[in-house]
Image (cartoon, rainbow, N blue to C red; front, side, top):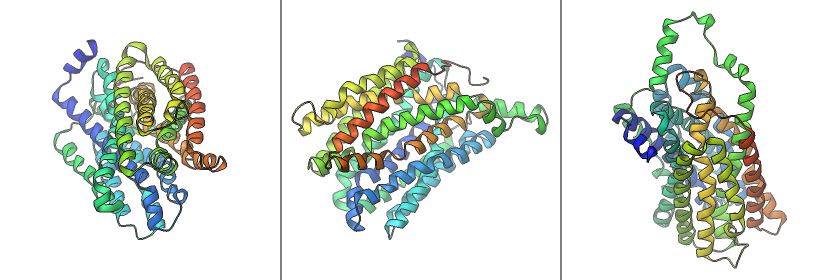
Length: 417
């Protein structure tokens, strides 16, 4: 009840800021997951292996820290709003470039550049949202915001199911240009973060340039926190990508021989589980605390593994869908706490940069996941279930330990440390 009451206190301006961040992240994820669904189709067109095309996923993840650094610095210097618009326009342009790729090399280059835009969007958008809403509403809004990711995955599944048979993989990437329209919403109706405006006013009226904290000085001053947050986000990214990247195309379609439509239907089901988990655990974190909620969700995923990969009984589309629903309920439940937890941990002077940078450094360190799982599957006779289950078992336990022993600044003020 308190959570719902907190949501009712949001002003129209606060809702618009949150909506802009949510749409930017949802459509960012939509563009990313379009590639996941068509890996084998692109491989066939370019006469390559799925492993070769999957380097596009690796490059996207590996380049995301560059975007987090560039757009995060811009957000702290010039404001969250213009940095968010620039990142969305950039990743939309690279999605269009992917649609017209004449070769695999062109496609891989486009996906690498797409990663820069994608890496910039999350951190800036999450900071704009968390700085714009009241503290008592952060938990549930964090859960809703992060679930823009499975909503984007869900949209990609729908486009794959309905659009691929008619327009092919290139047509799907053309559809991925639509996120650019979000910029019109941001330009017309979203105000700058009040916390950033207040700090910028103080900076302009305060000490001389030589006394103002620089991003590099602040990063060095908080180096232990930076390392911890990067390690935490490495585990988080292995957790999510380990359950998503190879699941539809390699595990469901290649290993189990399911049709495109059935694979898309299962993806829709497990993304509904992700959406429910993120909102549930995000709201729970306002009562239980950020660390305890992450631990609970991470440990919940471990007993779901046998059902998720069909090891508990003879796998069918129905049983695989049910297992995938509960797996993503737990995985994205843990993720639902991430936007608010990282923003509360970050010093005020680095809040535009640090959440996105550590998130994307985690992506960089976890970018080998798809290659690791492909290699594990190849060593075990093409058993992708073994590869998926082993990775999730290990990183789920590691994530729980890191979260339990880490810091927490629940409901910390956004204006100062």
